[in-house]
Length: 323
Image 1 (cartoon, rainbow, N blue to C red):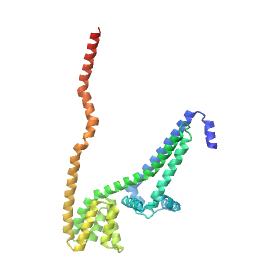
Image 2 (cartoon, rainbow, N blue to C red; image 1 turned 180 degrees about the vertical axis):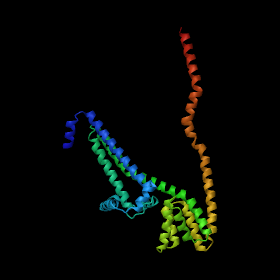
Image 3 (tube, rainbow, N blue to C red; image 1 turned 45 degrees about the vertical axis):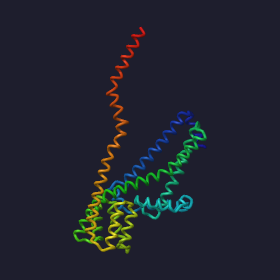
Image 4 (cartoon, one colour; image 1 turned 60 degrees about the vertical axis):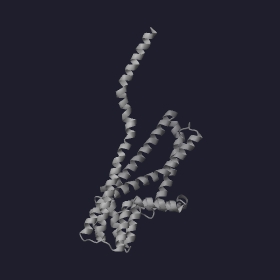
């Protein structure tokens, strides 16, 4: 109340008050966007990501531990009660690359913190806009809470899409290298490790997943289970098909090289068919831009002069009849 009284004393004009509050809110949103963009660029940039992997964990880990400890005290209230929803969210977090045991708690903690924070900021801003009614304030508070709840889901969905796209783009190269390594005489485990080493810089996400398969195998996990875990971590149909084929090959003792060669040829055919399908859809997708953007300008250029002449002739005819 003292701050509000001081503010009203120094800035008595209501219009100036609204202008300052609007500018402050815009500055907060701008700084928030800049912060999100900075964090995202630091995570995506390969050099910074590599330096982050080499550097020891310091303040970030301590902050994460404190945040997890604070969230776990209220985890019973913020975590979903449905087991299916928990499993679905946990699966999407794994698809996005967040395999930590505390990933689910951190995710819902961020959702709750963001929702409460946006509601408090909105409530603070609406105090400086007295012309808003109670219904409008309630709507803004509900909108802020909805944004705080929906924004982490949107970011997670984008992260899943981006990572699966990176894995899908690197899968053809990995499959070709795997065929070459197996035909050169390497075993399946050695071939997977060699492919992971070769793709470390070009496709780091896929290389880390393949290296994790070998790490699980060396730790004592059965090879079939390790391959199934690869499918569970990626969520890609292409990887699922390859894993099923390798498991059947290992189970029945058939040639891995022949199996991989056949699957590679089928995979190339599917990629070609998918490319042809996308090319065939281009004509249909171009209908809406043509109708909404190109055709109106074409009609203006083609029919516009004729319409202007007709209007001119009609105006002259009307004026002559009036005389």
